[in-house]
Image 1 (spheres, rainbow, N blue to C red):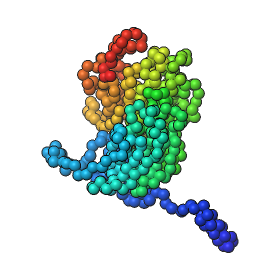
Image 2: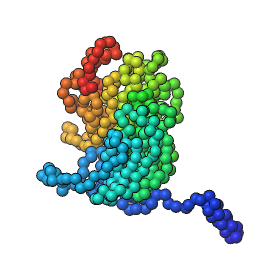
Image 3: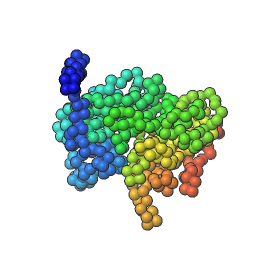
Image 4: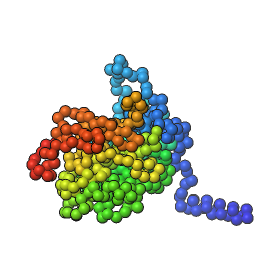
Length: 421
């Protein structure tokens, strides 16, 4: 028996030698204690300020450092310590992250760069080699908003729809998953979120006819765990996704039924989740900020009918399964590109003497929303800009906006300038 085992071992070794394969660890960053500590427990608070391991600082995404040595008295003394010339003269929208003295930032075309934070010394860089022809599908340049760090890996989304896992120490690719149909008009510009060893990513492209959804992948393997569509299937068919039941029961009837040329069935409907994805570790809920519809004009997209769920909404899901929990639609039947994809911040505030877990949101429609994040109930909607013309405010009982009838240009047939625009 031992000779048989020895023969098998020699055969495997010979095969490896013949094929040129190497038995190597492709994730040495996972064994580095500085990187291994970046997990769910760490991201609940974001740490003590020594590291900034998440673009939003912590799961609550308040983007506030606990450090106090830099304050309003000495901030004017700050100056440039070093700088790095980035290779692409295109849009830069990345929030850098820092772990153990190493700085990670993304650039145009979804490239990732690692620097020594103190000196600016380049450590490594990764180029996913995106097909440059894909750039025409990016409405607002080939930008990228950053990476997620998790247990020795770095995750980045690419303009051509891939989600890629890299080793944090070396920048070597560990796995890659294609999250979009390459023939579609979808793109990825937002940064991934990691919750309970699931990497969660949405997509953009509503302007060009993409259908929105969010997908979770296993952090170690890149295998898909679940998918939630934010717009019903244009054929009324199930997608075998976490969203099938809720879209059928709650959303489908909020869109026009009679197909017309150029409507949501042809365009995909939009509703892409291209940035705001926030995890609430206190209530164990995942919040999605959903984008605008396609076509923009509600009269064309949905024959002027229905609220068009889940466009311009905050949607809460169970992070492990993608199961629907609740939603609040900020702009029903939106027709002005009023996305709800802007940053979401979690907090606790006093209301009538009680602590209430709330969600703050300032989207493109000009109102600052406060929601009870346990159930999505609207608590407040106050203007944060002057001269809003599409609505005079919100009815807190129904949660709906009090619209200016003239703003529905698709119904009046008159030119209308919405503010904000």
